[in-house]
Length: 377
Image 1 (cartoon, rainbow, N blue to C red):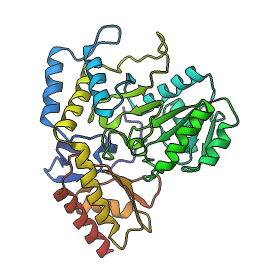
Image 2: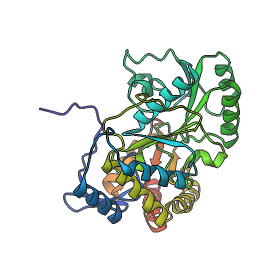
Image 3: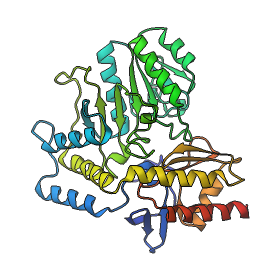
């Protein structure tokens, strides 16, 4: 049996990882500035993370949500303390797409609305509900009808109000920072106005922090720079440092009813312990501050390079826009300099999404190689 060939795959097989590095079968070392789509938050093979998961697996690895799982409440308590959302409640699932699906359902259950407002260039996942609010028709199958979704430009509050005025809207969903689109950040003033509009029209505000959350931007969630509090917050990726775990933070105003939501694998013993270990490491090693400081250092130095058109982002979520497609540059970075970076749906933007443990010395390694390749070109 062969695999269903749907991925663009680099001809590299990492067999070991440590911190911000991965190693192939020949022992070649690669600086990982992509973190497997922003998933590796505390670094590859962190010893505390390994120890916590190993100890839990030696006791019990999985049982369904039909029994008591104390690790779920432990995770919820720690997450509330770390994020500042201790008065919210937590629903656990497996992926960012699932988190967004469930957030949309909660909003619709609460308001009774059937329509959703999303944003141009948005990406929220590939499952049925998530892909309908993703602005990419090419990944929508005929069954994924999008008649119930209105797309508006990012940072255009008038367009939002016009969409909300048509009625029957249950939610507005927006990324803390648009990731796949090429690192497009909503203005703080726009997020503040969006919060006011949602309140005025009685619509739930969903903040998709799947890629931009978990300290990646220097705050626990990217939207916290704007000083707003969404109704629903979705998260995944860096939450488990590679173990599949995701969740929705839910405002107290939403009613929980038995059988309203459900999942088989979400919130398992192992998933919760992985997420708890991530929070422990983030606090012990002050990774939010490191993401802010090291990210600012990278962005300042990248902005000073004449060949670079624009640098966008926050913390260690960075988009480097060039004057031409970046595919050849990305290929040379990995083939000639052994540095992993990410692409985006904007062919001119290179994405950096490293572990939050990245040091200035490691940032300098990238900067030096990046400058050298641009000079050669």
